[in-house]
Figure 1 (cartoon, one colour):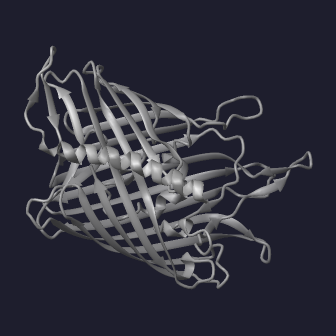
Figure 2 (tube, helix red, strand yellow; figure 1 turned 60 degrees about the horizontal axis):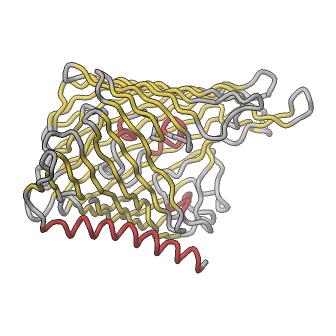
Length: 437
């Protein structure tokens, strides 16, 4: 325990040293002259040095997200109130340009136990009409997942992503992605990801494939009309088909003793012709639709996913299907508009325009269903599971670096794997202090 705490202190010490360097450079201004091209130094939002001809650049940034959650009912193992405080993310971000057309991103995510892992490590070439990116990065699927965790509206993304989590999971593997924009209104990407250590007995890779296309005839802050379609599939000889969801509350897994993450589709197993236990599913694909509209300080967005998990012949299971969607409405009381980037098809930050910051309120509704989730041994019939969630929240963007958020969540479920108290409902309050540099 002591060694873990010392490791955490060393890790945070390194991160805060980089932060201190970025903050201390606020006193620097003007150009730095070298024997090559002039260098421009920027200190607003991290530390960036770049040549005036844009051939080379280097930027140090990062994010710290400190969260607190209090939750009860279906969110806990015994149904009683629990709470948890934790660092949701502590990421040091390094990025830049080399020889104008080469871009690199290296983001290191520090955990509370002192360990760290690559959140992203990628190199991209932008010299062609399409960008080619190679390395470790999240596959592209969905509007809210494309938007950075720094600038999503709610503290946590919609629970519908829990129902097909692999579509955005790099799984510690390596991938390649082609992406690009056209005519100031189109964006598209196509990629393949090779998960680490997931080869079959014959050494065949179990890759995942993603395609996303966006049409945005209005694509600027405060003036957005966005439509998108997504498809993902993966090569799996067999998998268990299980589905769990935090239902928007990360504390359900951060609290190891009393946090409860309900199961909406149990592990599917059967005994095969050889008398061995085997997983019941061998096909998996997901379709997704997305839409968004923004006019001034108001924005609306929604997403829908449809997933089919193919059951093996003779397993005794039927194909499992997921249908899930969300709808979100947001309004910035102080008048600022949400940013938007066509390259990536995503929303961006809200930039306060006054000394007291920007205030945003929002409401989100999530709805998910798993069809043929499991077999009722009493009736011999397959049943469906359901989950619904309401999220009401407020965000205060004190400035471009500091954001304070508070969300209230109310969940209702049906026929899922319940807790010891057989709860089907739950309430939660979550809060976040975020610093971005």
